[in-house]
Image (cartoon, rainbow, N blue to C red; front, side, top):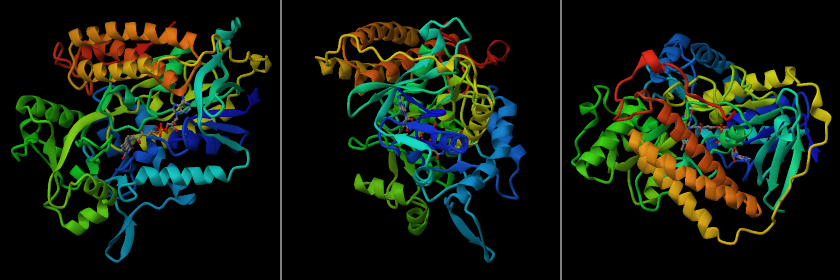
Length: 530
Ligand SMILES: Cc1cc2nc3c(=O)[nH]c(=O)nc-3n(C[C@H](O)[C@H](O)[C@H](O)COP(=O)(O)OP(=O)(O)OC[C@H]3O[C@@H](n4cnc5c(N)ncnc54)[C@H](O)[C@@H]3O)c2cc1C
């Protein structure tokens, strides 16, 4: 058994920022299931929203965030994240991150991008590869810390809790079981302060902008440990994912619309104005629903994002990554509109925490996309998630340093019991179930929902979960099997949460209750296993 003062699960912006702060106070293990940089963070393009200009104000950023959140944001949380943002951004600059600047009247100032729902230009970026630069900067800094161990290709399987071990004390997190992918063995890692920073669950849907790691592991592990989960019905669909048979999950950043890109239907018409007066720069949920409706109405396979009216040198300089990637698929965005469709993008709900990232389980923290702190409410404002991850990692690490749970942490933890240690005999079952979950979530629990479709999804998911449970107990665990088990659990949580909300609000839109009902539903959907 290994032991650390802090265990961090996940190596995106939230996990790495937490680990760097915690490392000043003790030993840290960062557990990550692929390579360090295999994260959603590394895929972020648009940038990080933060008030840095004299023309902007904290008040405006708070107002824009609350407006997008459709009545469910926690204003105190939004205020904390927005106002603490500039200090955290300076810390990124101190460790070497250089955001893009531009020349204004003889001096250089930050080149701020504008995105949907923001009333001002406030998005700091590094070209269109902001997340990659942030990830590399944080990983480089982590490599300089002598008391941090980065365990790559290690997948957290489940949390070890006092209740699971049968202690009759207040429940708490005592550590985590971790699968070492190279050896196939499950190790026991003890820590009385564990931070889940496992990101989102985009892979639960057939079409997603997320990389393969986004299988909802953190929410599923927390759920199994009896931790409260909130607002899982609010899944953000990004309106503009590249539509191409060979392109797997490639996002066309919101910044393209921010810089003047226009959405057109297959007839070349700027159709969004028919759905919302703000046109292509309306908030994401409205644009995604408008595209979904337009595609269904016209029978076309996709719509088109057109920025050909901008100077070629501007496009090449501002969007080098998008430009090159589209070219690889035979699309020249300087001359032609880019074919796009909506795809699952961001999980607004997650593990419920307080303002310092503490969950309902003592010793367990959740930060970043996996957490639901009340920042995004029913809909996330573009480029607010990197900011939230950065600020909340700092707050959670500070809380964890000062609140060490006492008592039973020194008891021996049992080793992992492998049970019947055969390898899975029919991998086809895993892949089939995986595909089935993703397709049924897309068809029944997508951008537009109904109770009937949700109930159908719920019934099917219960059967799948029974099958998967059998597999889990009868065969040796593998990354594929564990991810499938987590996907199924998270899918069921999304469906159950959606069934609880008998209204439409933010990202949750149902034909059965198409209006917002503040009187009954202006509150979080909180699910708990106990
Ligand atoms: C294409 C794309 C573009 C985006 N653009 C922007 C943008 O411009 N601005 C913005 O603010 N947001 C953007 N987002 C959202 C943002 O990138 C994410 O919300 C944010 O990076 C999440 O950070 P995180 O640290 O919480 O999780 P991630 O960065 O996703 O990291 C999760 C980590 O957990 C690990 N992990 C997961 N499960 C396990 C397990 N069981 N065991 C061990 N390790 C595990 C993963 O391997 C990974 O290391 C974008 C997202 C995508 C997909």
